[in-house]
Length: 339
Image (cartoon, rainbow, N blue to C red; front, side, top):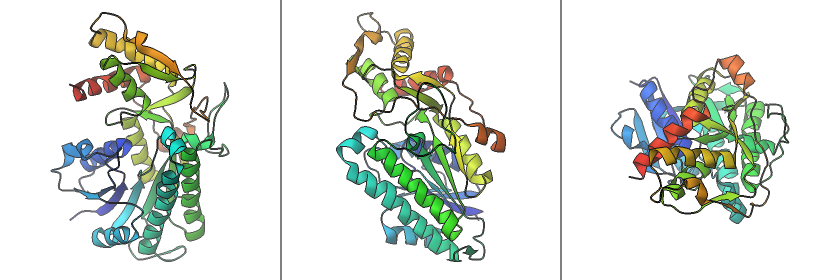
């Protein structure tokens, strides 16, 4: 008999798959229902290593499907939700914003409604046994907009999204917040910096650099390459989510950052330098010669950086990997993948 059932949405995607594997292995007393639509960014191969675990059930489905959500809550007696499912690539949000509005905003709303209807009798009055049920929402630092040369995003930073993607995530954050204040749903939100590590889709910066380098193709870098991101190793992120889900204060938001600010150009050169040593280019030249600057994308935010003081002080979280150790683990993982 399991202690409780937890629904993870988007659990076959990059961060979601890493977290699902982490949770399934760490908490055998939980029954994990993993709901994923399996769009281009989701892949059941990402969760292959837990396919035989008895406390994990994968379900192919859409968070916008109200009847499916209702049936899952009823069948599995869901008492916790960790919500990853989202369209997340900024470039795609520029070319096709409508799908971001539907999945990120409407999908989050329908998931919250399913939880509210299953857990509560009326606002702030829970059904017996559901008083501690929690809805944790995964968001991004991009909702805060862009930073200048100095300063950090904190939980009190005003929202100022600059892309359809970040606007859709900001909207979903506000909906989650409203369900805590209006209906009393036990919600938490985390806004994280750029993740990297195993299972990331090849469209993203770090895996794209690795893949293009190994294929000896041009490595495209937007603009002048001086856009800065704070890089967070995905397993450090998983540990932070675990702490927030279990110990975070209801209704609170927690920022999660790696304290690893790097320009995109620095990231590219670092990867090329490692590959030069681990798997030298066929002609003996450095992979860095493949780097090529391309036209910048519209609305490209200059700098993101997270102040993670709140989660560090309240929940005693700290990142284990710095960029030097994390990027080497990531490169080695992709070298195995691309064999």
